[in-house]
Image 1 (cartoon, rainbow, N blue to C red):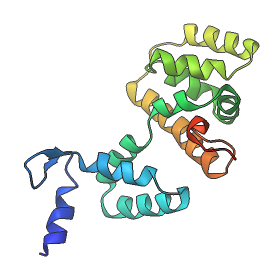
Image 2 (cartoon, rainbow, N blue to C red; image 1 turned 90 degrees about the horizontal axis):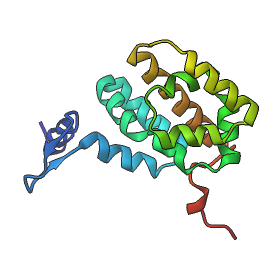
Image 3 (tube, rainbow, N blue to C red; image 1 turned 180 degrees about the horizontal axis):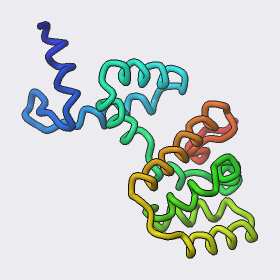
Length: 162
């Protein structure tokens, strides 16, 4: 086995020591690299990783896409995302969302819709954590799809405008 293959094999673990003995979170490092890529290339690489190691792919995707990305969306872009997402997914995600994220999602809605969502949320019974996690993943998938279509950007504040 070549040295490169040995090193690549270490990345399938959550954290592995680097040459200096420090623990390195391989999936987090890969996610950071993928974030810098365009959507098409990112999708190709994730698909290739998923084909070889679905567990590793899920770990990378978990670190690649975070609900905190929603905090960078201005209200107009959040409105686009909210319109594209199923209401049930919004409700389910609110079960475990940080307050800031929920506030950001609600800011992208009309007052009438926000009132309806809050009413529905108050009446929502207990749900499985896996249902909440899947709803959050669908929201993040929609966010990524909208970014690839060019309909929104997660952090237009960091974009340069000329």
